Image 1 (spheres, one colour):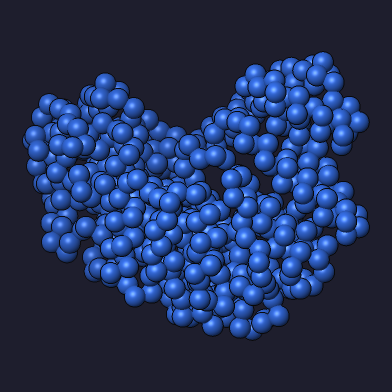
Image 2 (cartoon, rainbow, N blue to C red; image 1 turned 180 degrees about the vertical axis):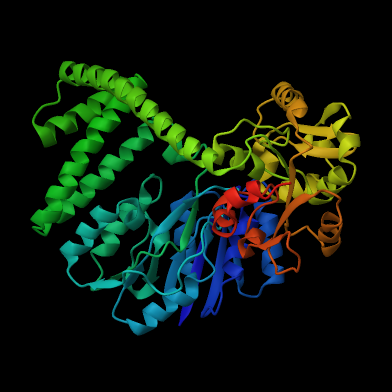
Amino acid sequence: MKVSIIVPAYNVEHYITTTVESLQRQIDAPDFEIILVDDGSTDRTSVLCDEFKKQDSRIVVIHKANGGLSSARNTGIDVSTGEYLLFVDGDDCLDSSTLSSLAKAANNNPECDIIQFRYEEVNPAAPFGHKVNQELVDFMIISEEQEFFIQLYKLGGVAASACTKLIKKSTLAHLRFKEGIIHEDELFTTHLLSQCSQIGYCANEFYKYAMRKGSIQHSGFSQKRLDAIRVREDRIAYLTSRSYDQALQLFENQLKLNLYLLWSEAYKARDLESCEWLENRIEKYSGHGSRIELVASYTVKNVLRAILQKIRNAKIKYMESKLHKKRQKEINHKSFSIISNNCWGGLVYQYFGLPYDTPTIGLFFMDDDYIRFLERLDYFLKQPLKFISVEQSRYKDILIKESTFKANYPIGLLDDVEIHFLHYHSEEEARSKWEKRLPRLNKGRLLVKFSQRSSSSADLLDRFESLPFKNKICFTANERPGSIFVTIPELHLLNIQGGDETPFVLEKVNLVELINGMS
């Protein structure tokens, strides 16, 4: 079998490399092609696509005028040569076992028109997420069309997304994505399910969906959001025509809830035109849509929501306090300092509910700078903190390649060592926190931590190992002898700033033992 992976790409120069690498790293994969559809990008996306094509014969590049996501996907479908299709957005990733696992399922179940899997929401800093079981989890085959829609309801966005399906191309026939709307995936899925005879379902989170600020899903109200109602009305009309009463009831109830929620957002945005449009549909499906009634309900719910949120926050704070006290009782000392090349040290303090007794919080160092910083720690800590622009950074080219470039954070200098204050909004905030925490540094009980990245050479690891600190720990992607080294293979998948390595570290390191072992 052959799989065509269709990747729409529009102004994703900071993400597309990671996406393509995740496709190229597929383990034991069947024959596949990667179709990069440059949808009229105005940044370096088109250039990068052409570079990928030169380096990999499996890559096909299509350049076209900007037409939107649906247009790009349709173009990819039309030029695809595979028997099966996968859709991957240009800023997301696939787990390395995706193609081999899905191909095995498709070959073993050739009657399935779709193999439906799930996605994991990931931080852009750690786009590869957690490793996925190569064997299909909770795999089942369904052959009844109404049950396809019931599963669509149960799984929600997972099943509605076009990116969570291995699709037999012949099933599409003339079906394409509707252009010019949002929620195009939901409309596409409705019509796709109507053309299927059998669907296989599994719980594996093969797709890694990067949650980014500013996306349509996470932005405020606009009239384009009304497309969601139109798409769901289309589904309800289809279910009605097929007399699928059980599925129909589920989606009608969902539509009513969507109508009320969207009305609340439109009212909050003072978009009275959209309010009126929604009120007419509320009346159609619920029998009442008086604005007075809706405004009264909106006001009461907002008051109750605020009260419930305060109660919820207080409960969370109380539970966290109990957990922190329990963990603190397990450690021999609460006063210790961690020097870390990224955010890991701060996360350890948060784990125990302790104050930050170190200035290296919410920031990251480039590997070579970090080792030099540690080799002359006393010297660099005495240097005045200055700031430079991204353009002045020695690592500008690396930052451009990573999503880090657009983060717009302060970059500090201690002599010639750069400190990337990733989680600070301004130079003033970075300076204030650094100078406030620096005097807390407990050199008598100090843990020095380093994480290997793709830029870390064996020389840097040798230099870290030779540092004179009593308490050291180093997380490495590859096996390395020595008591200070902890092997975590997933590290090479994380970005230069470290990403969220905590889930991987907690599986390998007992933090209580680590802290109690400090001398």
